[in-house]
Length: 190
Ligand SMILES: Cc1cc2nc3c(=O)[nH]c(=O)nc-3n(C[C@H](O)[C@H](O)[C@H](O)COP(=O)(O)O)c2cc1C
Image (cartoon, rainbow, N blue to C red; front, side):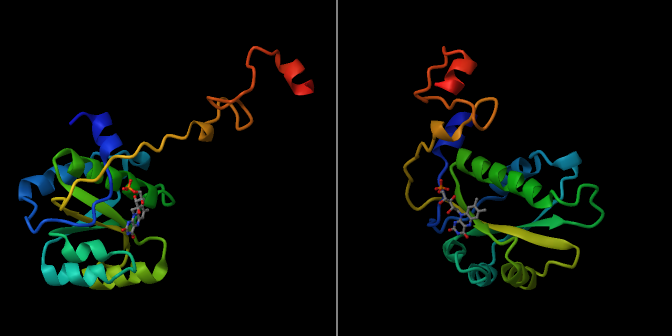
């Protein structure tokens, strides 16, 4: 699948067939995650791959919105190693880039998945830490449920030209009625 196709057709998948995710596919997804950009190339991401049903069931209850894990053949606990980071404020952003890469790669190879938020909600971080045995210094950031989609999902195009500003926030957006041929002075005093 071409990159733009993968990006534009990815949807969150929360229902899966019982088919397991092959080790080869897990590696594709994790390689893609670890190919993400990160501040100073620090790559703080760490992963716990979960396939045991009992563990998946427990993780499904770690947050109010993690139900997809209960029926998923595979879960990822995406964590950040926060020990000795040179850029300490950016680990959650780095891990988010890795998660999006993972979801896109999963979609590109015919899998589906959903991002399940954990950080920065302290009680959810605590739940996931306890269930997955994540040690001090490493922080759970998010969960991801992965598997073979039970049914296809329709792509949506969410492009909002009005949310784009040119040069400055008060600059024109594509589709603005503003007549860009007017000299700036005249426009300001119109
Ligand atoms: C930071 C973040 C946290 C999310 N947390 C959850 C979650 O806890 N449970 C869930 O089912 N979906 C979660 N989602 C998925 C969003 O609901 C989903 O991406 C959004 O509704 C757009 O739909 P789409 O992914 O199908 O395009 C999360 C997405 C992000 C980026």
